[in-house]
Image (cartoon, rainbow, N blue to C red; front, side):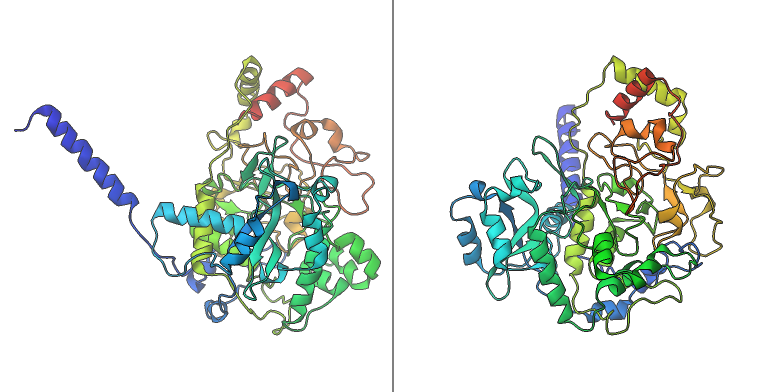
Length: 509
């Protein structure tokens, strides 16, 4: 028998080798867009009793992977390293990711970060002199309140050497909306973004995108395009029907370039400018059962995150049940991203960890935690995730008897919070439910509530928001002068000191 110390050492070495072998397992990207996986992915839409219709597996994979290229950060002119652009130009077009390669879990995550930061869409690439002049103006980012990190990187913009070997500007498809820059310039990847869409450079980029899309086939214009994006024809009082008769000027004001959008919000395709979406915080998404504020899709694995990425970048025509919004020519897929890129993206997003929280526990936060417990907040916002992952049916919704409806165990029984039901009942994202959100990370988020109507925790706990003469400090629907922000009355009757303590505790999460 070997000495006890040697036996322990051998055991530890074996365990270490075993763990290393386990983490070194190499896998290739799975086939993501499969009819089998899609069949049970989406929840049915309220008012239709049907789920969205997806592009078939055969349709999707018939499209080629086209011009999936590496991109590079754009710096404020005075902060750009010497020779930076010329170095990029000399490299020529580079692959965003090598397709078909097997990777370890760590390698998938590393590749996924590059995809998250750098993936772009072909139509956004431009060498328009107006866009280049904006980047070469060292004062433009500060003048227009661009998001700039402490390293001098302009969030959302990227350089790319296109297949014609020209150096062009483009937009980051993921990180633009899911990077938050704190006041000190710290960038939090995966967080709810605070991008300012009012930058004049976006006008040149969006014009280029429209020109490119017109080369692919017939494309509706103006109000017709807005109606196609947002229409809910099964509703007799669909507010989006207004687009059919809008003048171009009115349409531009309601649904033009999002120059006046509240940071952290965006009228997503299938949503509506009248019932907008807040940008979700992706940190901790691996612990959520559903995606989107209205729980549009199940979140069963990192592959579902990859599928969602495919959906919003390449493969959503808006069709639900018997309702179609695009002609066969309009919905034709001309290109797609690789399974490698999207799988890596899903792996990276699942790996995201919360940033260091500057809000430290104190006597005040301890008191706030006691108030949180005493008020029963943990019933819905259950530690340690600070959500019970359940769905709250909105007023006016009758649960749908459909094979893909959420199970009863996922629904918060008896909870009708009086929340504004617009997004949940009057859009193509409307499932009739809102998710119970996690409170983790509220210290770095704003534009709270499913549409981003509330700008801070202080405003959320202000009973004045329930009044009809109120106007929220976050997002408001077009042409709104005053409106209440209803729902979730919990905590509104607390004393000012108790509210202060509760908010202090929430900011430690």
